[in-house]
Amino acid sequence: MRSLASPLIAWTDKGLYCEAGGFYIDPHRAVDLAVVTHAHSDHARRGSKHYITVDSGIGLLRARIGKKISVEGVKYGERIRLGDVTVSLHSAGHILGSAQVRVEYGGEVWVASGDYKRDPDPSCEPFESVRCDTFITEATFGTPKYTWPKGADHGADLARWWSENADADRNAIVFGYSLGKGQRILAELARAHDSEHAPHARRPVLIHSAMVELTECYRAEGRVLAPTRPLDEAIADVEARDGKLAGELILAPPSVLDESWAKRLGDYRTAFASGWMQSGGWGRGRYDHGFVMSDHADWNDLNRTIRESGATRVFVQHRDGALVRHLRGLGLEAYSADDLVPERYARLPVKNLDLFAGLRPPEASGP
Ligand SMILES: [Zn+2]
Ligand SMILES: [Zn+2]
Image (cartoon, rainbow, N blue to C red; front, side, top):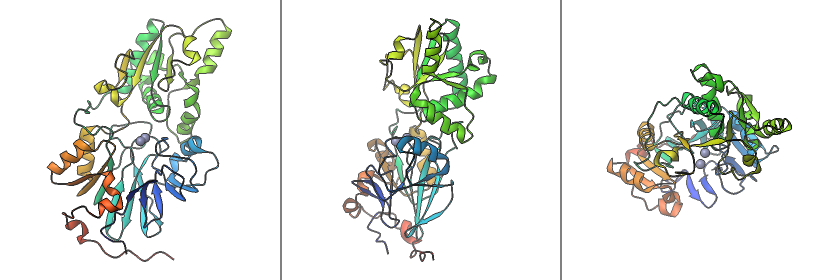
């Protein structure tokens, strides 16, 4: 039986590891069994023998780390047995197929959040709140200065900016990550078709080559996106007629303005779509416009999510200082995820004895 002095999910040199289940979560090195929360490159890495991920994310995972990987898809909420634990994946609302990992052993439940957000996003399933005893949360925006207004109509805002530029015969370039942000923008624009700025929003959006395959993965999973056309194809077309692009909306990953295609555009304006825009953190002055569209929870949503989880122990990844202090002020046991290293975990004070009151021996392994 697992000792209470060891974490059900530990921090190791390969990433989060569940020894009782024999698997890693988003390992950053090759392992035998990797449960992958989503296909972003800091979570999904090549080389592992076998992967488990949400079924709707398999296409993205293959597009990102290899067509021939050995991967098993599970549905959101489906419970599977790995070693001595029961594992299920629950929507993280971050990108298509993104998941939180729920691990149950005896009566004890841990959840590792992966990246998540609470804002509505028509390109993926909404976040699901999962009850647990111990919550390992990301905190990309884990300081109080990162709060942003809710309820923005991103599709209408994007369509309006596009039509303003198109009316002046300019191209409008929106920079956003090629996986997730790009498709969210397309899904938001698809909804804006009925808005007053629709005339331009009905034209295909020109997408950078880095987004083409990933965007098709979304369509294959039934996500409704604005019509698109590969950017290089559109440029080749217009140049064959000795013209230049004008009035187009172009979606591209950040920092590609140096690429040759940028010189072949006509007049253009740029915008960046990111949560970082809110504080001017990235790109202040580098772009003509910013759309505050985050793929992560802001400060308020981090706190709301921790509250809704009911967890009495919280381990914070990425930006831990302010959130850990804040949670301790609320009476929670809060630590940096670094404290999930077994030697450090063993020295943590056990304050909330309730946490272990319901703990029973593990169920016998299945046949
Ligand atoms: Zn991510
Ligand atoms: Zn991440």
